[in-house]
Length: 180
Image 1 (spheres, rainbow, N blue to C red):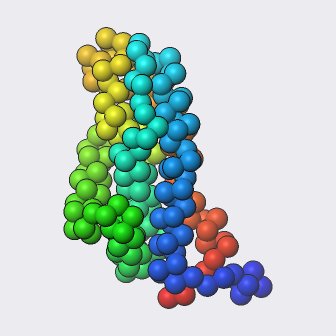
Image 2: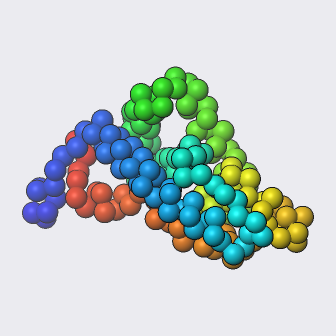
C-alpha cells in the first residue's frame, strides 16, 4: 500500500516522452549488435551485409510493436492520448509531419499483421517484419528462398533478440503511477 503512495506521478506527456526516448535509445544502441549477429548468421548463404546506420525500418518496427501494447496497458482514451503525444514527438525527432508519420505507422501495422496472420504474437511479427523490410530472403538457401519464408532457425533467433525490444509496462507501472 505504501508503495503506491510513494510512486512518482507522471503525466501523459511525461509517459510518452520516457517511452519514445527509451525506445529510440534502445534502438540506437541495440541495432549495431543485431546487424552484427545477422551478418554472421549461419542461416544465410551470403552475408546480408546490413549497415548499422540503416536503422530506420527497424525503429519503425519496434515503435509499431510497442504501440500495439498501449491499449492492453491503458484504457482506450489514455492510450489514444499517449499515442498522439508519441506521434507529436516523432514528428519533431524525424522531421516528418504527424499525418505522414501516422500513415507510415499504420502501413507498418497492417504489414506486420498481414505477414504474421493468423498469429497474434507481436514478437514473432517483429521478426518476420524485419526479415521482409530488410529483404533477407535473397540471402537464404534455395529451399527457403523459393518458399519465400524465413528459415525457422533464423526466426527463432530473431524472436529471442526482438523480445528484448518490447517495453515492459508492468515494471514501469510498478515504479510510476499516472496522473490522469
